[in-house]
Image 1: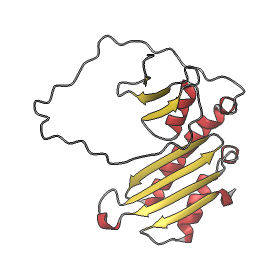
Image 2: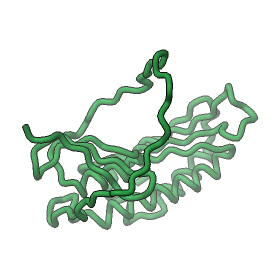
Image 3: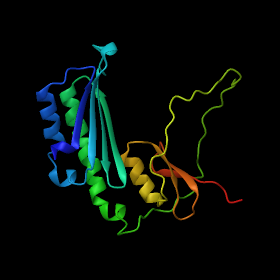
Image 4: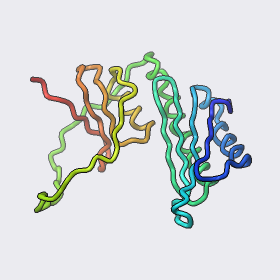
Length: 194
């Protein structure tokens, strides 16, 4: 099982006790880890930030059949980060495992129909946008774009630790975006029929 986990260190010494501790934590739930194809774990120490509470970062990308699980945590102690990220990874693997029959297509994905919200409150208007220039800080490419149900898209979004996901809706054939609302629940954006 340990061969599925590739652990790399960036900006810090690769110590064997830290590697063993991480492997022990990440492989402790054998029945959940069985579905993993591979896992990349990157432990980083931000050298330019030494002495700051966010010195260390751990990023975990786990490939599972028909999906990807992402965990990223920052803090001041790598051992504590391993504990925290191990717990998060366990919860996400458990969630994936519980919905395995849906991921494999044996059971359909289900969603609750969206309802309109009448009491939406807008934020105050900004008076001057003349000098405002939007900045694109990151660009991503879509790796997996086969059609999927709305509930499957929500599961992919939750497992990847993102707040939104772009997907092709299997019911309508349209490209849609689902996002997590600040006040709870999810919202879907889809193009209008023309």
